[in-house]
Image (cartoon, rainbow, N blue to C red; front, side):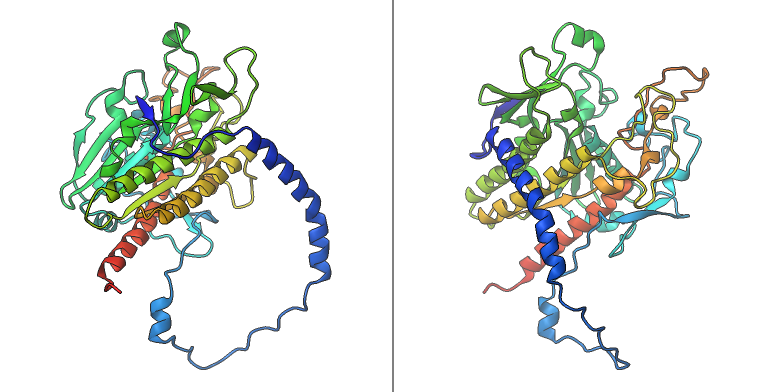
Length: 458
């Protein structure tokens, strides 16, 4: 279900692609000259800083008050072994976890993949603390919007929280496993945490904007639509209509843009990927994925700004988070028995990131930054952050269900063709780290909101 976007802003421009390429070629030509100039003009090295045996100087109270909290780059680091296991398992949170991602329940024999922690280079990442998260969102609504990886992250968060605090599933009970045609109930679930009057929801929106999905069932696809249709000038009202009730919204999508699709804007075809129609030129999906993130964020900003302007009360602080693209790890054919059988992470520097993954990461980070500036300019009371997980996710080929997307896949022996899931993440598993980082983002935002509320008016 969709409606004309409330955003006054963003439409597709094919000319921008050519312009960007021209600028890129010019920059590449200038880089060697700039590097030569830099090397010839380097100053002599700085002398080493003086050492002191005295006590370090103490900043003045004014300096302490003005110093902002350090912002950590959690995306740069390495995976290190740990002896501490996860806060939950496939049994304790089995009602929440999608069956195909409950690797323990499906018989995955190795457990080494759950004994790794992410260690950022320049700072510490504390283990997830359910009490801290729920305290930061007390009385608030946290919503995940996007594809099945958004749901994967949402279910991870619910499992982490319910390891310490009970939750009530108040919407979406039943309804299949959430991926079949018509499994709508599980695609729109909501949990209430009475201890903190907090709510966590998930909204299925694989394109972030309005679109028509091709049926998953081959039989249904053979009788009708065999590709996706995506409408970039239309909001997906299944989630957009509920934006005024969100306090924290986490947007996460990307994998569906790799499928065959036609792209539309204001009634006209603007491109296609793996073009299903004759006489169409392949345009790829980088540009339209960026446009989808931009328009989804614009929808959030516009609807929140409209809510704030119609109220006499001060704007309620909100937070929007863009979880960046999560790479897949297929090696060879998707249905090969060895498509993703690695049992350890890649070491730092062991494997270069794919060009596609970098471009999708870039789109998420840049659009989040631009939306944050737009929100501030419009006084929407909305902070926008990028949750950069692409690099650390790319290093975890061992964390996917793989063959164990189906229960006990070797019960009848090994076959030549066996389906794998090398996209989603086992629960518990590496995706729990996404929520450890999300906790730090939410805490920083909540602390800032609290500081603003307690500051005296000028």
